[in-house]
Length: 114
Length: 112
Image (cartoon, rainbow over all chains, first blue to last red):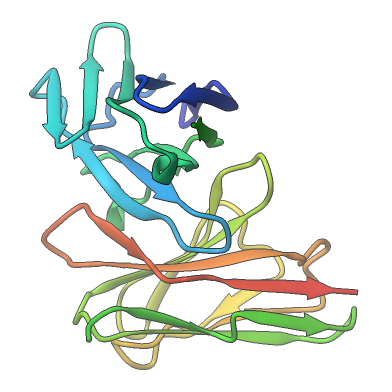
């Protein structure tokens, strides 16, 4: 019930291409869905987040698409750049949880090639 | 310069020794968290604290202990009871009014 399933495990995209990472969840009580970006040896950095009252949120080259009925959400990175090469984690939380505990996906290692 | 600091960046210990990881934040955040990261497993919650002098177990609390004597500090002790302590440990904090958790740079603990 509390799991967030993330795919693919790894992804190779050419520079300028679109990177797409998918996540699925079971618990319909989740109401906050952030994406984090992590570079090797560093802590994760919040990239973008969405609430279920909208189907899409865009910030620069990064877009979250949210499908409430399918219980899925995805991260799209447009015009992917070598500097985007990192591990990306999706997560989910619900407002009824004390302290808004996050449940994380297992991560996607993205490599953007020249 | 506001943020979350974790020290040390790398820590080496012999099996059977307790070790304490430091986490300090100057963001005036109410909630603080400790996560453990292992390759291919994402981040798993160890302990969290919403206010000073109060903390709760997360999903994998066995073998760990914490304290929250000050709002800005949330140290984690990895005890000898933790079966597989080698991992990357991440501290995070959150303002009480938002969902957004912000992470520190992490401490890589190696126990041999």
